[in-house]
Image 1 (cartoon, rainbow, N blue to C red):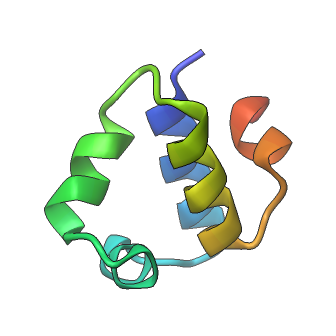
Image 2 (cartoon, rainbow, N blue to C red):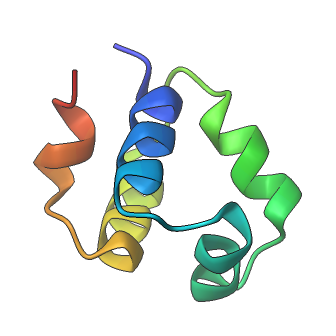
Amino acid sequence: MHIGKNICKVRELLGIKQESLAAALKISQQTISNIEQTQQLNGTTVDRIAQALEVPRTVIMKFR
């Protein structure tokens, strides 16, 4: 499972740009890009992103 790719797919399905997600998380767009290229992320990061995307964590963790 590639968590970063899942985040990217969910974000795109919701019509949210990297810049908007970055602003919600108070991080740079480049950091979002790096996250989306990362296979494994810690739970806290996934939780923060899920909250910013307004989806349950399981949507990101189990997206296919």
